Amino acid sequence: MNDIFEQILQKLKQHITTVDSIEDWLFIAVNTMKAIVVNTHKEEASVVLKAADMESTDKIQQLYDMIQGRYGREGFSFRNDRRYYYLSSLVARYPKTELTDADRDKIKEFFGYDRYFMYEL
Image (cartoon, rainbow, N blue to C red; front, side, top):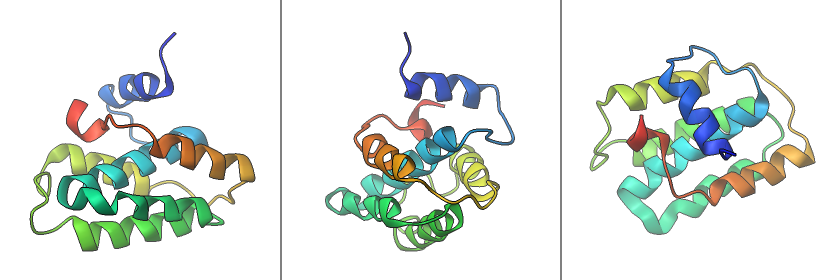
């Protein structure tokens, strides 16, 4: 059976315009934030784990914006890439949702993936 990365990757390859499940959205957000940081400052990747301390998706979106500002500029090789814009738009469009403890656990789990949608789309 395909793991969650493969399942979401297949959805992304169909160019979905919205994400329906919180689990999928969390994976996309964490995976894309980590890809941004790893692309420019791999040793600082743990900054993404701050998402596990957030209480809602809008706070994660703010963290995403901070990561884009700090790591998504100079030296970021995907800065003008359509895949980066696409993933960022999916992260930005998710409605505010309160996170549960299970969601926070998923964030930590998703952080462990070393494959990135940005490179495989």
